[in-house]
Image 1 (cartoon, rainbow, N blue to C red):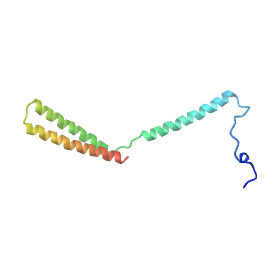
Image 2: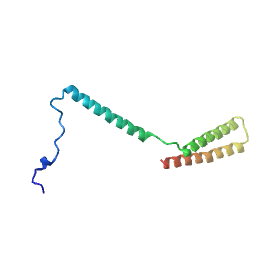
Image 3: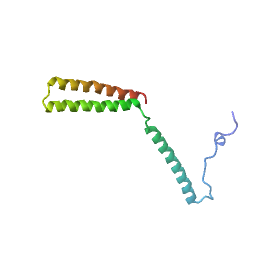
Image 4: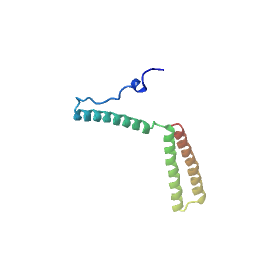
Length: 111
């Protein structure tokens, strides 16, 4: 145990110099705030940056193929094609959509 009181072992809090003018104090505070803001912006950018994901690209391409199958099925319906071809295109759209969802889940899991 030390014989010094607890307050004597702590460093004194930083107090502004009496010779430092209020404008100098404000400039110092402003520099610190700008530095803090820069650190926060860097942290924000790092948190929101996403690396390129091949799985996300594959999911997006499969999503476009799904829309193409759906548009083809609607075109078949408008031009009164055989119902079997419409159903086949809709089934393909469903299977491709499952592939797209799987790719998106894989991309999210790798983050």
